[in-house]
Length: 157
Image 1 (spheres, helix red, strand yellow):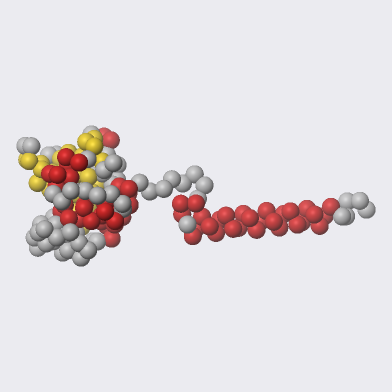
Image 2 (image 1 turned 135 degrees about the vertical axis):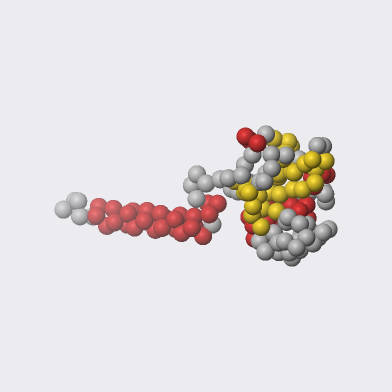
């Protein structure tokens, strides 16, 4: 008979544990950053998602968004929305980043296209040798493969 009073206590503890587990799982689904062991997205990864959300936006020279972009206008806009300020032009953005090797690049890093020492284009690295960018007049923001080896990489600090 002494075991009978313990059963409600065990059931009560099990119900409480189940409720806490359910609440934790629900919170991690609703707020992904709360998932155990998950790390928050880097600024670069946030900027990458913002740039990708602009897919199909028309290219316009000198435009910095929110609906039209040139190449450095897209990177400026995306990083600003992610909480980092960049200069206006691709060359100035290159000079503001921490330069990294191709082997160190990760999604969200900037990819600078150059001819000699002249930086003429920029995009955001998306992984698998692709970038999100605003290519040129008559095109729209899109994801493309990197088409040349004449690139440098930079990480926004």
